[in-house]
Length: 170
Image 1: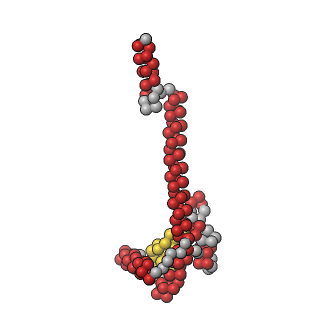
Image 2: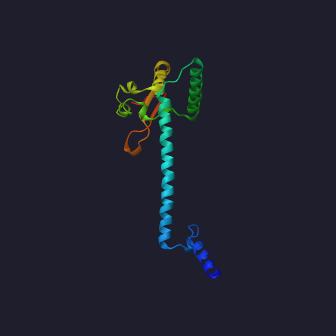
């Protein structure tokens, strides 16, 4: 009887998923399916996490920030630091803001088509950034270029604001 129990235990051990050497082809295919499902599940979880993070970003950026004198000074100092670094590298533009196109009332269509009225489609913090440029930086000779910087699935995605100060090309 012990021989039969030993043989049965050995047979069970041979068919565990961790020991591919003794798996049948059917068992190996099932194992592969389980591994593919586990991998797909991880990808779905990651995509779901990214979707939730983007929703939170849209929600926070869609709400204007309180521009206290202290906060405005922080923003200005940060921008000046980035401008100096870019100038030292010989650059004549920097990306100053990137945001999901969902923050635009038309999902970035006017920006993508270079329509003159594109600023009217901005909301929240991008709107504030545009107004800061219009009121403070444009009079100082800086240009603002808005463009779609990402095309997921061939559709407009994130919008980028570039601050430019080099010679305007004809």
